[in-house]
Image 1: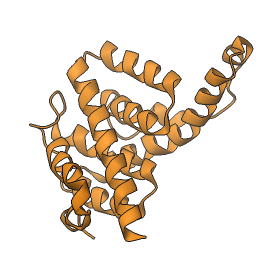
Image 2: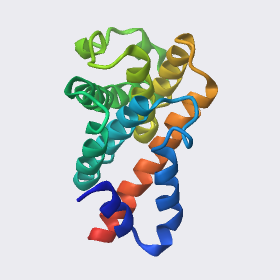
Image 3: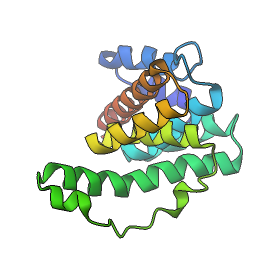
Length: 177
């Protein structure tokens, strides 16, 4: 199913999602981000929704501008955040500072060479962290993004992509059920 087909299959009550999806997947609708960043973020978010038709549609959309290595980078951001968001959210929610002082013991080698530039990887990681609900990771990635010179508008755009892609995945899966 193409992205257009998936979008058109959304129920009438999700008209706002249809409009928002078109918007956030464009440079005009995601200020502060370029086309490649939008595609990396959207694909990583689609993976985080766990709705396979949306992931396939956004991977095809991403492949229009991204190299296989950049697509790998989007997948890497989704994969590493699937692990990190659980770990860091849990250690943050436990309210015992001892866990924050301990070595994680989890391999995160992909962060050194993810397949996309550091800023784009951080933006995708932030967006996936929003979907997965990890405040500790959101704080960390937002700080790093801003240190790389990105604006608050770029951060907001990444979060808007996460919100819309997640909502489309939830709604499309429910409509298909």
